[in-house]
Image 1 (cartoon, rainbow, N blue to C red):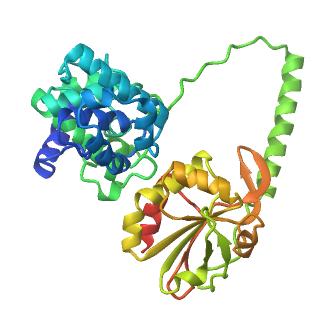
Image 2: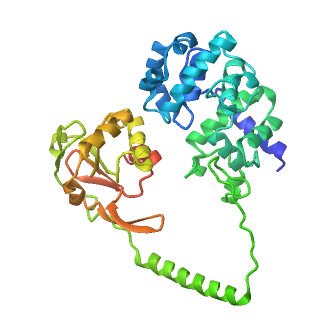
Length: 414
């Protein structure tokens, strides 16, 4: 199959099956879209749509936002990723719009990228969505999907953009951006692509080989490998190095064989242990309080660490969906109330975090034990989630927690 045939097949599929493809960011004018796209960098559209209504209401124009300051804007966007930098970008962007562009969003890419907080991807989104320019914004979804399908063979976002606009007809480029994003967001997932449900397998290189091409990575987060400088080694030195390497290799293998990560002794069908502990606001919370409800009791190692933050934000972003399923969400760690309050406030968590400083709940659910991280073996809280039904019985135990998609893991079980 030629590259031209591949592009033709993929584009025709989308034209027939996804005739309307638009950004999922909510906006009502060009200024709002620009603000939303700046905020959406390394953050979900779902989260941005929760933050922007009040922001847009209080700062409807560039003129109003330019008269504000970053501290004020920060209070509106504190729950998005990198709020400090984004707050500064928004105020500076609004000021430049007023001083250099008379408050009008420019239509040209080279003008857009002059605005603070606006990179090439953001500029391409605004130019294509607002002005219907043949601009291809390449985010992590577009990069991954286009490389997997075989539409591109790119190592950078710019290379991916250039290859895509070379082969996609100009009239389809703006829409193709959304086709690829939506396909990556809901079907061609980063960790577990839904190949069985995908309708593009006929043209997909990844599906046919089930192999990631190391020469053309499928993530924008890859790092360039630096090749080591070769040294001339004498035969005697080489022999010693080989012997050392063999000893280390054997030691590592023995460690792997000996190490068995701890898992809870509780089983599905067991009665969930009762508990009573204070949450971040000092309120006593017990399992008995939620009789007749389904309880998500998730144990996590520590407040404000990257993995624990992603897990909490996943449960936060899908909180309404979980509530509709009659779920009550409770987080548990050994952090104190002060730490929990700071963590919950910063990320606007709508559920309780129990301060199990004496580890009574942690031990009752048997989630403290030996674990391994980056080659180190130590004792700590094992990331585990218990789904308890309305009768107080453990219905599911999730030990392979996917922090970014944890809410979806739970919803898929219900």
